[in-house]
Structure formats: C-alpha cells, structure tokens
Amino acid sequence: MSVLVTGGAGYIGSHTVHALVEAGENVVVIDNLSTGFSQFLPESAPLFIGDAADENLVEGVISAHGVESIIHFAGSVVVPESMRDPLAYYRNNTMTTRSLLNVAVKCGINRFIFSSTAAVYGNPEQVPVPESAPTRPLSPYGSSKLMTEIMLHDVASAHGMNHVVLRYFNVAGADPQARMGLATAGATHLLKIAVEAATGQRAKIDVFGTDYPTPDGSCIRDFIHVSDLAQAHRSALSYLRGGSPSVTLNCGYGRGYSVLETIEAVRRVCGRNFAVQYAPRRPGDIMTMIADTSRIRGVLDWTPRYDDLETIARHALQWEEKLFHERQADQQHAVSA
Ligand code: UDP
Image (cartoon, rainbow, N blue to C red; front, top):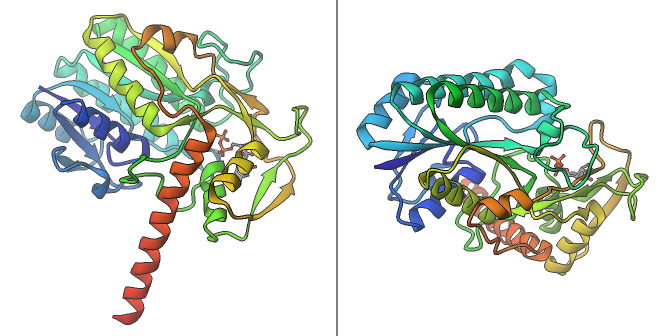
C-alpha cells in the first residue's frame, strides 16, 4: 500500500514526501517538474514525470503501486500571475483536481488530502480567522482553490471520500538539513526576497506599505515553517486512517509578525545589514492574516517544532546560501568549460 503525492517534487510537496518516508510510508510521486526538482526527492520515492490531470497516468500509478491515499499539491500558486492569467489557474488547479478526483473515485480511493490556502478567506472580518469565516477570495488563485474545496465536498458526499482540506497561511523556511527549500525562480514571497537580499543577490528589499493601521504600519502575517506543515500532512493522513470525518483546517501558528519584524529577524540571523526601502502598498494585499489554530491543534496529533520566526529565517537563509553557492559554482564551471 502506498501514498500518492502529486506535486511531490515542489517546495511543500518534497518536505511532505520526506516526512512520510521518514515515518515509514511507501510514497509514489507524480510531478510534471514545471516548478519542482527531482533531486528534492528521496531515492525510495519513485517519481513519475507527468501531469496530475493525466487520468491514464494516474490510474496506472494507483494500480501499480497499490495507492490507498492521495495528497494533492500539484498546481499553480502565484497570486499576481493568477490575476494576469485566470484561466491557467482554473485549468491547473480546479480542472486538474477534477480529473484527479475522477480517477480517485473510479479506483475507490477514499482518503484525500488537499492543499488549500488562506487566500480563500479574502479580507477577513475577524482575526485570527477561524475556518468558519466567510470565504470571499480576492484572486483567481484563491477562487480556483475554493472551487476545488467545494468539488471535494460534493465528491465526498456522493462517494464517501474522506478528506482533509489544509488551508495554508504563510509557508516559509526550508528543510533544517538544507536538502530542499524554495528554489522557484522569480519568487515573490517576503522571506525569500529577504534572504536573497541578505545573500547579496538583491540590492534591497521593498516594504510594501508602512501606513497600515498596525503597530509599525506594515502588514502582519502568520508564518508556518514548511517542515511543520509537512508534519501536519502526515498527521492528517493518520487522522483519516483512524476513520475520522472530513475536516478543513487552518495551518499556521496563530501568531502574527509584521513585515518589518520579519525583515529584522532575517537581519539578526544573517548578521549583515541590507537595504530596506519603504514602498507604496502592493495592490490586493490583506493587512493582517493570522490563523485561528484551535481546530488543527484539537483535531490532529501535531506539535510544531519550529514555531519561532528566527528559526524559520535561519533555515531559509541556510538554504538560500546553499542555492547561491551552487549557482556560483555552476557559473564558474560554465565559464571555464
Ligand atoms: N512583502 C513586502 N516586500 C516584498 C515581498 C512581500 O513588503 O518584497 C509584503 C507583502 O506586501 C505582504 C507580506 O510581505 O504584506 C507577505 O507577502 P507574501 O507575498 O510573502 O505573501 P502573501 O501574504 O501575499 O501571500
């Protein structure tokens, strides 16, 4: 019996694959490597390069590997890109999941874990945000994930598929052993940009908005370490195997840090100064996003290990330094060849 992880070579997917393998699970991965890296995967997890929407591929993998549960990460995740090309997001996120669920139902899979997002809430009326808050996404990315949540709910009712929807808040950091981390080119996430500045790959970091009605004027986010998030997936699988009912869970620590505090944490751990420039607000940004974590803490057997902003920043920096040195070595190699 094994667990199929779609998008398992990506940032969160690869951390989850490692967490599952380390827990003794048999894992099989489908990833089209559009944003993932095969070298992020442990040797014991076979990789099938292809699309999670390819029903023949998925069916073949399920039957060849005795798949009993699916953890579905494959999809597109960049909010501004979704604004520019919404139909790509409805294809890569909503339609791909529709195809995957079609095969899952056909093959009798009855455990499904789905990576959703806090973007389904839009601008929250209440912070920390509980799972019961109204869902009013502000981007096609958030809408494409919410549509998938609805589809999953309906499939579960019709076919008895038990599922866990995990709504991620701001995922950050990297594997403490620096085996994998965020490596996608052109990332826009705050901590990624900050560690790029800290390693001299950027001249500065812009702070988008310092006039919000928050204590220091910048936005506030709830950062969750990617390794803790990976463990939440492993716990969600145990939860479903225990026969518990379908559930939607916020994934964060329930604590907010401002953009300026986050940049300060990176400065402290790197021990170097880098330029910080105050810039206008970024359109579409939500002022404060913090998870109400009472449900996940009550429902899952999950104890976060890295609930500390400096630890998240240190692991992100360690990974970025590794990437930077690898890239420099590649360039030197190319020049001397
Ligand atoms: N941010 C910033 N400078 C950057 C990148 C992000 O000030 O170079 C801010 C952004 O405006 C938001 C917060 O950091 O207030 C988190 O942004 P991110 O893109 O990391 O995640 P989001 O919460 O938008 O999904």
